[in-house]
Length: 235
Image (cartoon, rainbow, N blue to C red; front, side):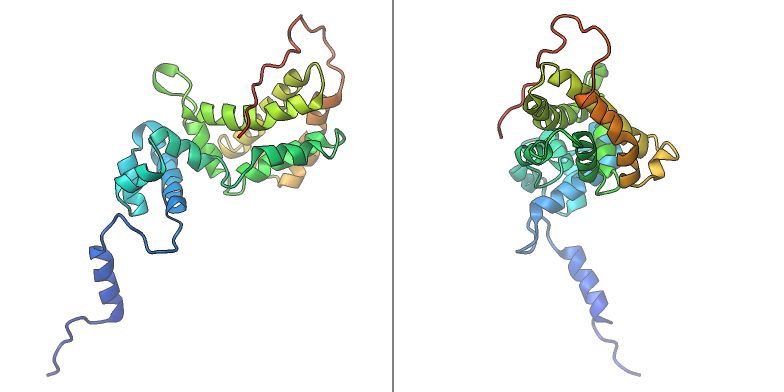
């Protein structure tokens, strides 16, 4: 009769090591912040903003809660950081949209926003919508993310660059339509819109957005409607 080995296989040893490996530090070279953000997106998507916690995100990421707080001050900051597409520079984004001129701006705006928020199949956007309403019906962190990133940093800056007395109104129409398209595709999953490619959506919706941007506003505007209400800020 042979002697049984202390560890039956390399895979068994690896499993034991995985169980006893302490949390709190990840191997050198791993993107710890990125791992935490990925875990946060999954946690918020599954549980919603109110039910999720920093401790639960840390557990999902395999790190200590203190390490999460090293990168993010609180749950709200973690939520926002996980939803804004990583590496996006709003200033460069606006320059790329506007510098090419007004012709085709509606299509470029739509294609750019869809490209940012659909790269993960719309998961980020679904998490944003899940946090739109906070306690007692007050605007939640999702509303703040949309208002800050899309509203002020992108659409607000485009409105200023338009040089039109009704630029703010024009961009608010564009913003409402673009957000509506995202909701229909990734939250309500309205068919057949949800199944169209980005190119198809841009071809169908882009001309309408262009009309908002450069067409005649075919109704009498009351005094003050065209004033700029956005407050774009520098990074």
